[in-house]
Length: 87
Image (cartoon, rainbow, N blue to C red):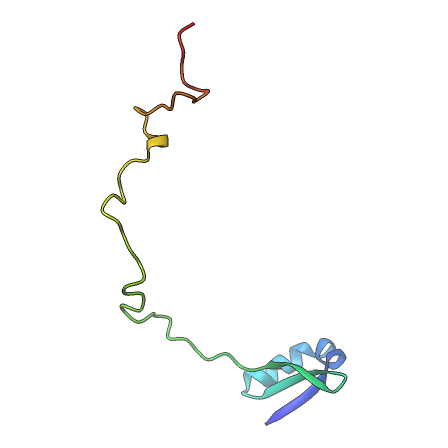
């Protein structure tokens, strides 16, 4: 069963409308008689994603865990202001 309500009624009775949606009802919200949104119950998720759904989308390069030069204590760029210089 589908029901249409105006924005004012939706704001005033949102809790009641959401209870009806939880019971499976579909509610359309209209502005000046023109539908602008639909309240529908969410489908229950299984909680688990299917194995391999991102296969081929993720790439881990061979140098993934190599140290980054800017965080390597043995690396210092010549323009680094924190680089100790002898006067």
